[in-house]
Amino acid sequence: MDKIRDLIIIGAGPAGLSASIYASRYGIKHSVLGSVLGGQISETHEIDNYPGMENMTGFDFSQKWGNHVRKYGVEIVSTAVDSIMKKNELFILALANGETMKSRAILLATGTKRRKLAIAGEKHLLGMGVSYCATCDGFFYKNKIVGVIGGGDSAASAALYLSNLCQKVYLIYRGPELKAEPYWTQKIKNSDNVEIILNTNVVEILGEEKLQKVELDREYSKSCGLKLDGLFIEAGSEPNIEYASGINLKTNEKGYIEINKDCTTSVMGAWAAGDITDGSDGFQQVITAAAEGAIAVRSIFRWLKK
Ligand SMILES: Cc1cc2nc3c(=O)[nH]c(=O)nc-3n(C[C@H](O)[C@H](O)[C@H](O)COP(=O)(O)OP(=O)(O)OC[C@H]3O[C@@H](n4cnc5c(N)ncnc54)[C@H](O)[C@@H]3O)c2cc1C
Image (cartoon, rainbow, N blue to C red; front, side, top):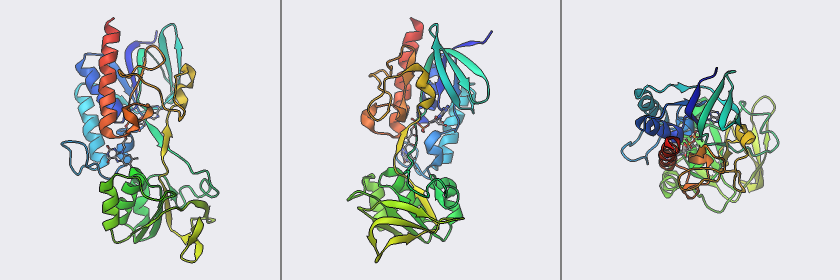
């Protein structure tokens, strides 16, 4: 017979890893399942706003958190959850590695994924000039000309990272001003090789075997086209929640899981934490994800004790 766990944490990003540390300290026997150790931070070139951890690379940050979790003897299983069902008060998880797991409580901490622009050429040129991860692919564009689409923190962070590698970076944003943290915006403005193009949409990505140029919806340098070697799309994100469709969680109009103060959800036995929720006033950061992970586990501990 399958072993029944008290808790399964789905997601190995800041919310899931922080939850695991707290669960270990509360003595809750649990498993952590996650496709990517560190989640989105593993893709970030630098984290400089988490207290006590200055100038950390995203990779080092992820490794440190992973080691902290393992210190308590918890294994981080590197697999995705394909689906969840609830039967007789138990959650049944089907994993991408073919296994099935059962538990009394689950914590959903699967964060977000990058939003696609859904414009011509985006799908066709993915991996041939188009990318959703500057830290993963930036190296291929050393001394080249690249574009970054977006105006938030992740676009700003990507533009700055690329400015250290590339000859020129165009930061293209549809709004009238960047909405990134002023710290990032100032760094961009001080950079010699980042040019900000505001009030502009990329409407088409062109190229056969590789990216050649993008079409803009307004004139730029007497043309609507911009020649680029690489294009990084950082146009926001959406919750990673499809795998949980079998348990009918209540979500807000944008698809984020609605949580209460203690991170409980509309489904008894299911908690949620981090970027996947509508919590922390929508402020999607490492510190808020980690805090929600801790709050959720305290609530889970009390519930399991009952
Ligand atoms: C480029 C970039 C730069 C950033 N810079 C900063 C910064 O400087 N400071 C800051 O505070 N925040 C920053 N952020 C935001 C921060 O990374 C997120 O707020 C934080 O990572 C959210 O943590 P999370 O655990 O909720 O989700 P995530 O980090 O998204 O982690 C989700 C986890 O769930 C896993 N997962 C997803 N689907 C499944 C599935 N079906 N089954 C199993 N596992 C699954 C993933 O593999 C991952 O392990 C940045 C984000 C980006 C993209």
